[in-house]
Every structure is written in C-alpha cells, then in structure tokens.
Length: 356
Length: 277
Ligand SMILES: Nc1ncnc2c1ncn2[C@@H]1O[C@H](COP(=O)(O)OP(=O)(O)OP(=O)(O)O)[C@@H](O)[C@H]1O
Ligand SMILES: [Mg+2]
Image (cartoon, rainbow over all chains, first blue to last red):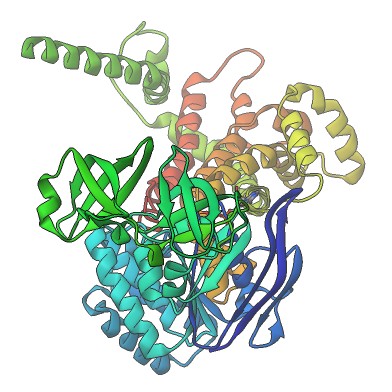
C-alpha cells in the first residue's frame, strides 16, 4: 500500500493538450473515484500512473518516490481494464498466477495465494477454463483476481464494470467495496456511473476538459458543488438550472428568472445587484403541490414513474425542469401545479459558473 | 418458393464444383500422366485415365535421376528461407504495429517500392553482386536472395496479424511485471501462431516454386533446386513427360505435408475471449 502524489501533471499528444496541470494527493489506503464526461482525460491520467503513457510535464510519486521514468513492471501497481484483457491462451488459474510466475514466486506460495483469491471471488470451479468459455461477469472476476493475487502498492480500475448488465454491476460494485474494506489498498477508480462514484468513493475527483473541477467526499460534491459543471454532472436526475438576474430590493434579494417570474429569497446572496446568475436546485428539493405566498405556477409536461419514486417533468413558462417525489399521489398529475423552490436548497452560480 | 430455393442451392453447388474442377484439373493431369506407361503415352490418344497404370516413372526418377538431390536442395532452401523470413518479419511486423519511430513512413514506402518492380530487372545486378562473394552457385546465395524478396510482404502480413491483437493484452502483461519483450514472447507471440503459420506457408511455397533466380544463379546440378531440376527432363530431342510428371507429383508432397502440419494454426479465433467484444 502506498500514497500517490500527482503534482502539476500535464499531458499532450503531439501539440494537443489533454491534461492541463493536474494536482492530486491520494492518501495511503484511500479509494478515489475519477468521474467526468467522455474524453476529459480520466483514462489518460490513470495510464500515466500505471506507466503506460509518458508524462509530458510534472511529477508522479508513488510512496513518495518519483516514478515518471519507471517502467510499468517496476511500479508495482495492478490494473483492471475495461476490456478485462485476459490472456486468451491461458486458463483462469494461469491468468491469475501470471504476475507471480513472472516474479518467480515459490510454487506452493502461488498455489495458496491463487486459491485464496479464487475462493474470495467464487472462481474455484472455473480455474481450468479458458477466458472464452466464461460469461462476462466471470471474466470480470478473473480480471479482479489477477489484480489481487499480489499485494500491489495500488489498484487502478478503468471502468471495470461498464460492460456488465445493471444487476451484475450492482453486485460487483458491492464486492469491490468489500474487497477494499478487506485489503485496504489504495485505489483509483474511473467511472461514468454516478452511483458507482457515490457508493465507492472516499473522495470523488470530478474532471472536465483535462482540469480537475472539484475534489471532495461524495456528499460534499453532491451538497456543495463548486461550479456549474460539478452541479450538473453529479446526481441523477441532474440538478435543475434557471438563468436569470439577481436583484436587491432593500434588505432582500430577489431572483428574476428569464421570463419574468420573480423568486423572493428573503435574504442576501453573495451577488452584485443586477448581475446575471444561474440558480440550481436538485429535483428532490422541488416541493410539489405547495400552495402559499411564494408558490410558483408550473405546468406538468410528463410523469415518469421509476418504481422507487416519480420524476415529474415541469415547465415554468418556457423553462423546463424536473421534480422528484416519493409521493404516489402525483402519479396521475396533469395541468397546472403549484411548486415551491425552498430557499435553503438553492444553489447560486455567478456568471463564470462558480458557486457563490 | 421452396422449389426456387432448391434450384438456387443447386446452382450454387454446381458453380463451386465447376470452380474446384477447373482449379484441380491440371493437378489431375499431372497425376494421370505420371502413372501412364511410356508405351501408352502417345498411343492411346486423349483419355481421362490410361487403360493400364504403372509406377515405372517414379522408380526411374528415384533410382536413376538426380531428382533426390534437387529435392533435398529445394527442401533446404525453402525451409531456411521460410524460417529466416518469418523470424525477421515477426520482429519487424511487431515494430511496425506497435512502435512509432522516426523514418517509419519511409521504411514502409521503401518496402512497398520493392514490391513494384518485375524481378527480371534485378537478375543482372544481383548476379553481379553475388558472384564476387562466391554465392552464385550456392544454396546460401539462393536463401539470401529469397529472404530479401520475401521479407517486405511477410512483414506487412505479420503486421496485420499483430494489429489484430488488442494492445490491452500486452499492457496488462507489462503491469503484471513483464518487460515489453517478455510480453511479446509470452502473450503476443502465442496468439499470433495462425499468422506465423500463414507466413511460413506462404514463404515456403514461394521459395519452393521459384524458378527465375534459381535458374540464373545456379549452373551445376549439385546446387540445383527442383524447379530447375525438372528442366533436366527436357533434352535436346525429346521431353520425358512421364518422368517429369512423376517428379512433379513428388515435389507436391512436401508442400502438402507442410500445410497439413500448420493447418491447425491456420484456424482462426485463437484470441476469442481476450476482451469483451
Ligand atoms: N493516443 C492518443 N493520441 C492522441 N490523442 C489521444 C490519444 N489517446 C487519447 N487521446 C485524446 O485524449 C483525450 C482524453 O482521452 P481519455 O481516453 O483519457 O478520455 P476518458 O476521460 O478516459 O474518456 P472515456 O470516458 O470516454 O473513456 C481525448 O480527447 C482523446 O481523443
Ligand atoms: Mg477512458
């Protein structure tokens, strides 16, 4: 186990910059999840840590030691690929023991370690099979097994579950979490999946366009997103955004939506009078059917039952937004409805998109 | 509807049959002439099968001609060429497939260029180069020339096989603790066996049937390969067709054996299960 420090790391392919100065300190034993839209450089960062990609600028340290110029085999890390990358001409057992055989580990030691990993992953009956005779889920397990047979300094995962169906993904997600609790190994995990990021991470690193947008615990990112990108990216269904202008009238601030609807805030937000801003609110915070002085009149567009709850698509004038509720009374809703946007749950973003 | 389907299947089969018959007929004729006794060769006219068969030509060729020497020479030349070319082409093809290096574009262009000239143009310069080195009347000289001619195409062939193997596999091996070369030898090479077999087979048959350079570079019977040797059945006044065909039939044997040997590697699908597709 080891800490991983990434200091001012940049990466360009030819003249195309992909990562613009990434700084990240990962503590020993921490589970860090990298999220971000496709093409933002998550895999590139992971592959640089693994040594599969050269570092253009900056420094990567594993356990305090600079590894920029170290070959992958000398970095002592394990990686699970999205494609699994199992060796097709070797049995499951040979796949799992390959790294140990390369290190000339004693035969009986290999046997006991591989057997231990196999039973942990439920692979015992499959040890003699070739990868092509395995299901997708089983292959995924073998890929995990291959990583855990030795005690590497860190585990790297590049979307390891994205090829599995939803049910299997849920199951493997829990197993990965359990494995991490057992082994306590430093892990970096790349995913597109909100739920995986939220459930697995000690800390989430949200990336966009080769720049780290925010680093924090899952709930920090959820409750207190640093900017518009993080606010929109974390959470499903995503946060609602309303463009408008912030107006001060006496002691109180008001938010005037594009379209003219005025939202009294009761107190002052940290915004200049008359400045453009964006207001955000999570769908589950939108209160439906709330008559009262501050209620807004919205029109129901569409009702989507998810079983667990209901997603209601609404329109406030021309602006579309969503509400999420557990109350089944709203299943048959149509026409106009009174909604309230509770002030404590509002997020404000200034013109540059930063949270205020 | 079903009648139509049967009809189209029938037409399909017939077309395949006609094609196979067309392709195999020369071989059949070779076999037929080789077992026809000399006295029937010109007297029976054109028949699909002689009224009487004998192995006299085979016996004569093996006992009284120099065919066994030609055969041995061909085996040495073709076998060595196939092995040397395949080793070189595997290494070069891997480099072409996986590495980016300066001058790669030019190397590829030059290699393509070598494939564009008719070989006849090169006979004189090659003879001129080899003769001061004492390589004109030797099998080594032939192996060198054949290797030079076959390496470019074999390299492209091997490169396409390496391109078909996911890069993830060797990256996984390198993370598991292998150097790039160990990953190549233990992971990539075993998966390229079909490609290696195909390259071996291709080069072997090319060298086995090469006539032009063999004819130009070799003068005596000692170092003659079998395509040249076949010409020794053509004398000033007559052609010994029976013996020539018998020699031809025997010359087919190694090529057939070779393909039998490697055919299990030619079966594709060895990489199935490597990555989720
Ligand atoms: N070998 C390469 N040459 C040039 N550009 C590359 C290369 N590999 C990746 N890129 C570019 O780098 C950027 C980041 O790629 P990367 O694979 O890290 O994205 P990602 O965040 O992992 O995306 P995804 O979620 O789709 O896997 C992309 O714009 C991609 O086009
Ligand atoms: Mg990726």
